[in-house]
Image (cartoon, rainbow, N blue to C red; front, side, top):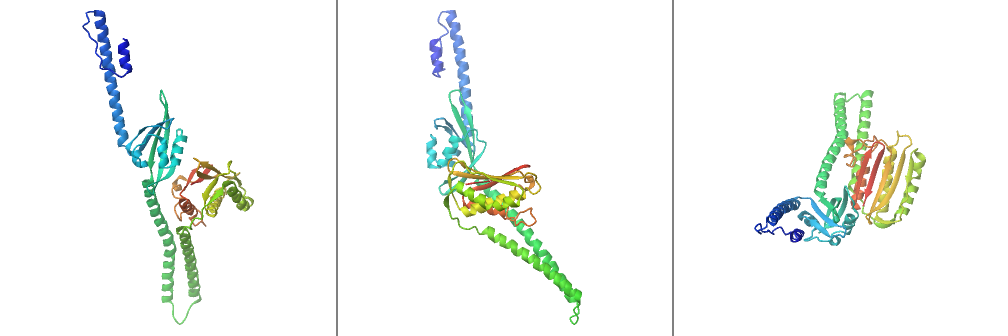
Length: 384
């Protein structure tokens, strides 16, 4: 029995005990041990086959998967993860420092992370990774399962869709201006053709002046639209500097003082707990934040006890997030995907370039801008 147990502990199921010892008791015992050995052997084969099966699946999926323990040793990593990170082997998370230090820090600090985005550079190419993680407690240790996907291709498709939407908006705006101009011009032409050249009636003059006023009005609107497009398409060069966030928030607070006096909404600019520094073009970023605050205030026009809150935090040690929150009615689901499209607006006097220009500013900073909205709470956030 001792020999049998030691064999099983060493994963040795090849031992066979003689069933012809001359003792019926020992023969029966040996037969039972041989049968038990066979059962264990079959179960072990099934487990190894299952492991091989899931290992093959893991290696063939496009999603990058890696598993590491509390000591940062990588227990498993599939081909997709190695290709994504540009590594031949991955045995310890320290190796990720060659790829991106922030990635390693994110993985170490991620506990059941539903979704997080990070920008990393590999061979002069920028990737935007979506990372998800889950902590799994095994009998002997705790491991973290991480999946990573490069969504650049999806973003490029969305960008193409955005350009198509932009073309539709441009077409709509230009046609709205040119169609009435063409119609008025044709009407005036027919009016003057039917009039006697020797006698100009006051009614003809009045209608002509009215038509020219309408043409001028549409021309000015079209020029204003083109000027907005010029502003959007010409992003100024960034003037980057290290900016202390408490000083930055002090300047924001001073600049929005007139808004606090003119509007009934409560506007809170919350100072960061730590006075960290962030690289930015301060003037462009101030312009962006004030634009988001203005949008929030406009969303509160029909809301009692409206408030706007601006706060910031440091993410993973070297990334900044600023959030502008309001308690307005929220953004309807059917236009949530449209608000960042150039020239899309729901305001009668809006140009539709505010949010799209803000996105341009964030892209120039290598960051992102996004929105989460439900009735009673809308958040616009920028991260870089």
